[in-house]
View 1 (tube, one colour):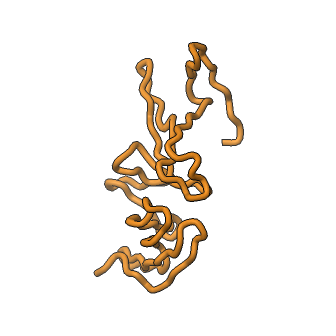
View 2 (cartoon, rainbow, N blue to C red):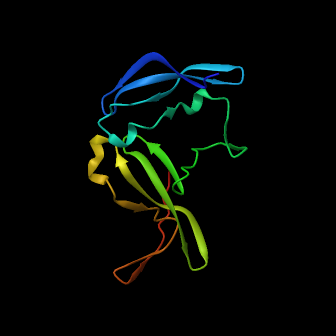
View 3 (spheres, rainbow, N blue to C red):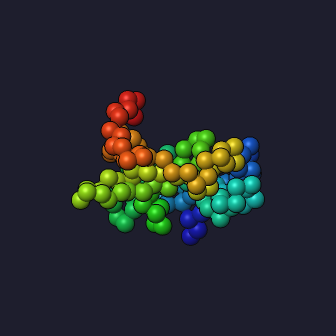
Length: 145
């Protein structure tokens, strides 16, 4: 039994190109248009990936453990997709005997409208103190997160 089957449906994304949709089968459940890919996307890094509709699935599991937020990328600490930036890679930082999870992030392959942020690294300034030009920059509490 095929778990992913191209179903002939397509959708256009102005920044990603034409998506080819899949029907996803799992157990007794069949969900149309629950996954798609962009084989001819102008964003080369998306061409070999398949995107799943998180909300179309009853549950997500990673190594027999249910996942309630975005799944981890097996090649980096974690990834997420935000609109309009694209797919972010996150890094944890170990300093002073402490590990701060997902403190920094970068967009290795941002969506075309945001290419200026390619390769830049950002940090959550409310989760650690930073030394800039020899001066300690204290944590700043950010509201709204």
